[in-house]
Length: 121
Image 1 (tube, helix red, strand yellow):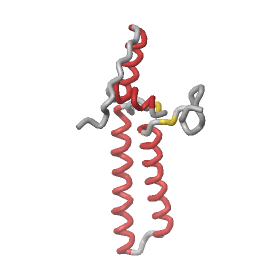
Image 2 (cartoon, rainbow, N blue to C red; image 1 turned 90 degrees about the vertical axis):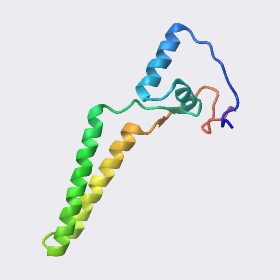
Image 3 (cartoon, rainbow, N blue to C red; image 1 turned 90 degrees about the horizontal axis):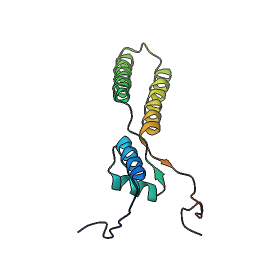
Image 4 (tube, one colour; image 1 turned 135 degrees about the vertical axis):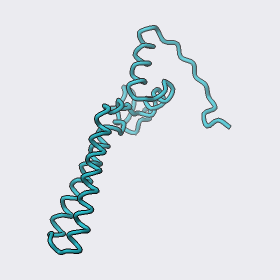
């Protein structure tokens, strides 16, 4: 059974179709998924550039190295654990912020005739 039982057909001109196709392609979404996101009050973000994934792999590798150093330092007692943990937490937060900034859709501003709840008046 379909989750969406209502079909809506919309006619667009050539320019609108090109914009829709272009914008949807930039996000990696289908036209339908792109339109549903807009209807639900979100503007999907463009796919991250290819080097984003390489940067994320590097950051994760750094995090793994820090973790290995922490284990070694804990066994030998040659590293201040609190300072190291603080740096590891900063790295984790930075990775999360990068992922969020690049991949999460943004809430769009109110449309004319809508209240902050997104519902018509």
